[in-house]
Every structure is written in structure tokens, then in C-alpha cells.
Length: 154
Image (cartoon, rainbow, N blue to C red; front, top):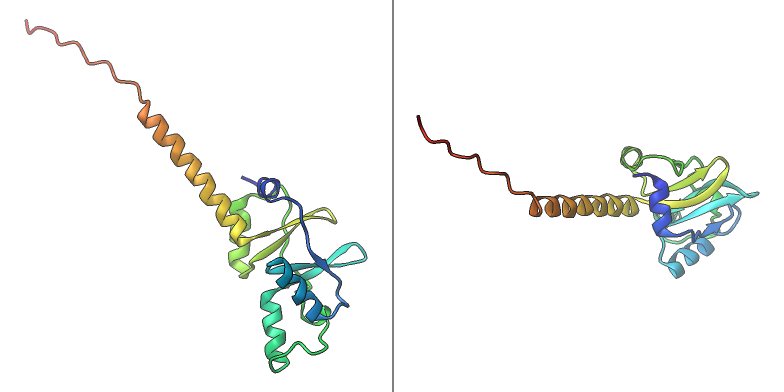
């Protein structure tokens, strides 16, 4: 299974922010849409990712508030990325290795979407459930073996 399979099911809705927007505006967008990340775009290109992890770091850094912090100062400016053709097993290894919960999907310089660790886990579980059902159906429909003919002893 590949990333493109997840994107096909998930859809293409993306929420973005620019690096020079106030962090409190970005947090408002995240809260309004119940999402854990925003893609940071600058001049039509991926500039970084902002996740709830960076937001929490900003809150701690600013003594419990966001203050006048800009997205640029807290975003991950070198996010882990993948392509639509990346295998899900590879994405899973990459995300676990970097403790990344969100990953932009890039086709060259074009942003195709964002997948989450939840999306990856769901795809794996759905795939295993399908395989399990197919195996059970195969076993249930297993053809009976012909019984060997008993030969009389000579």
C-alpha cells in the first residue's frame, strides 16, 4: 500500500498558514477545524509544519501565553516529507524514527496533502482486516479433499 491510497480515501482538504502570521491566529484555525497541524506555506511552497507540539513549546516558552509569537519562530522548518508513491511501511518507519505525527506529501515541489500517524495506522488496520476476511472466506470455502479409496488387502 502507498501514500496515494491514503490520500485517495482521506480527501484533499488542506489548512495552511504563512510563516509571518501570529501564532494565536494559527491556533484558532487549528481549534476551529479540530486539526493537529497546519502546513506553513510561503510563496506557494512548503516552508514548514506547525503542530500542537510546537504550540505547546511556545506556550511554555512564553510563560503560559502565545504573546506576539509568529508562526515562523515556532514552526518545524525542516519537516519530514514523503511522496505519493512512498510505501506505507516506509512512512511508518520514518514517522516513528522522528516522532512525527504529521507528514506533508510532496510531488516534486507541489503539496499533495498531509497524512497523520492516525491515517497510517488506520490504513494498516483496514488492510489487515481485509486480508483477515479474505483468509477466513478462503478457509470456509476450502474444497473437501477426496478421501483415498480403501483398497482391499491382498
